[in-house]
Image 1: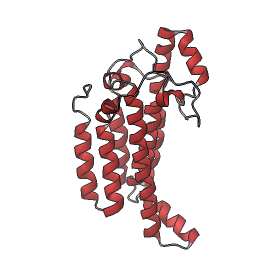
Image 2: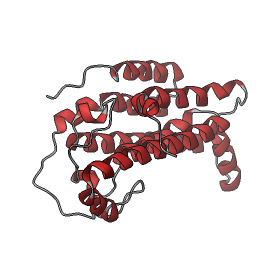
Image 3: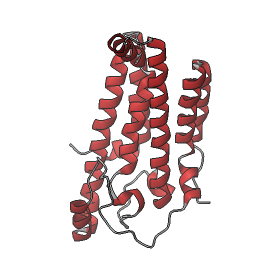
Length: 230
């Protein structure tokens, strides 16, 4: 089912609610998802649970860095005022950079972000975060695709038939166009995401939760900074 106008216009708030509810589940499920998985893996491998947990946190941190890279790459081809617009923009079709391998790289990156930050949630929180993020991203995608199809017709249909919707192809499905990425705009637009990645990398190294949440809070505030072209 497609997202409503309100959901699309307020998608940042809905994403925030998904994260907030997921982490609030610590009140009913006190065990961290990473610790729970580390205990199971350590018992099977005959290893130390703490060592396994540190490895899993390192993997989660690497995944979040990958998320930031994907979002920056995608935003470098799509202006920030389009990425964060309250209304769907249908005047142009971007089919370069990551858009040659997946039609919705930003939403795919959001799912990776949920997987990575889910390492800091409880067991039930991890489930709610990943499933909630995936479901909401698909609702937004269905909304955007319907409007793009109506506005662009055959050109969008050809693009849709060539490039996967959500799970990226291993190789580009379209030839590159002359359009070049504006990496300055991309990094500026995704500064908050790099902050999230930094927070998790720092926690994986130090295991200091206060430092993690401090960096996360500053990064969240950075999301609301103006995202003008540079």
